[in-house]
Length: 270
Image 1 (cartoon, rainbow, N blue to C red):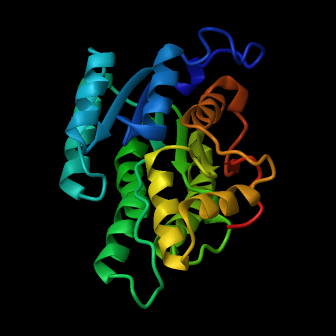
Image 2 (cartoon, rainbow, N blue to C red; image 1 turned 30 degrees about the vertical axis):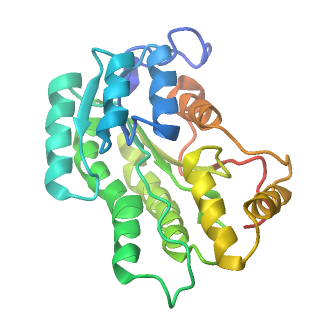
C-alpha cells in the first residue's frame, strides 16, 4: 500500500485506517515492540518483525501464525541485510519502519562503565536504527512515501546520571530523527520519534533495581522517586506507545513529521 493510497484524512481512525500497510517492527516479539505489532495487526496492517530471543519469537509465531518473522540483531550489518531480504519476500515492499530495538545498557558511574558495554548500547540503540533505515528508505521511496518511527526515550531530553550510554544513544536518536525528517520530507516520508517515559515491565524493573543499588536505597524507594518525577504519578504501558504509533502511521498523522512525541505522563526530570 503506497502513501498515495492512504485513506482520506476525513476519516482518519476508521476500521480500515491502516489496513494493508506493510510494516517492519524491530524487536517486535516482546515488550513495546510486541504491543506495537499486535495493535497494527489488529487494525489490518501487514507486519513483519525481527527479534533475537527465540522464546519470544516462538510465542509471537503461535499468536500470529502467518506473520513474517526474522531472527536478527539490528547492530550487525549482515543480519540486517538478511532481515530486509525477508521483508521484501514477505511483504513485497515497505510503507512503515518502526525502529524499536534497544537495550537498557549498563548502570554505573562513567568511570566504572566497561567501554564494551558503552559500544554495545550505542550499537543497538542508535547504529541499529541507522542500519535499518539505510535499507528501508529505498523501499519507502519505491512505495511513493511512508513513515519512519524511531523509539527514543524521556532520557533523550534529560540528563540521566548513571545511565550515560543509554541517554547518549537516545539523544542521538532525536538528532537522527530531525535530520531524516528534513532529508526525506521531499520524498513524502515522515519521520518522528516517540519518547516513552517509565514503561512498566521487566526492563524497567531491572533499571530501578540497578539504580537503587547504585545509590544505596531500596527498590521501593527508588520506584517512588521515579514516579514522583512524573506529573501523572504512574507508569505508561506498551499499549500507550502502540496507540501513538497507530496515530502516526494513520492518515491522522499525515502532516506530522520531525517531531518528538512524549508518551510519558509528563516526566519532569530523571
